[in-house]
Image (cartoon, rainbow, N blue to C red; front, side, top):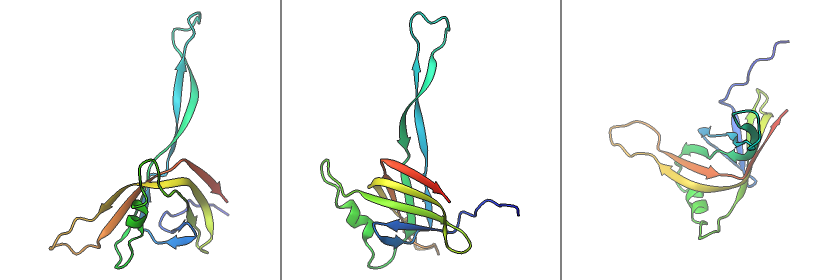
Length: 143
């Protein structure tokens, strides 16, 4: 049987025990700093390169604005000087049976930016809100 790549439109987000609905998630990324080093007696005229610290990109979560749901802004309001409520978030890409196939476990996330839709009288679009979060780690489980 041939295996096909998974579609990206079927996913769910668990947020501190609550399943949240989102239209779009972007920014799931990890990179490693490159450390360059050259000792003075090296016969090579270029540095060697070594892996350094890992960096996790900020993740953006977008969803429609719903009356009475102020979850993003309530979390934002936990930010104080050097303190914030951190949350672990699980993002799951689902198969046709609604079972997780790839799971991203986001560690110690906290909000860094909220953006609300432009308001426009002549538009027939949904009002969206967007939350950008920073995190301290991402674990990927590919089942």
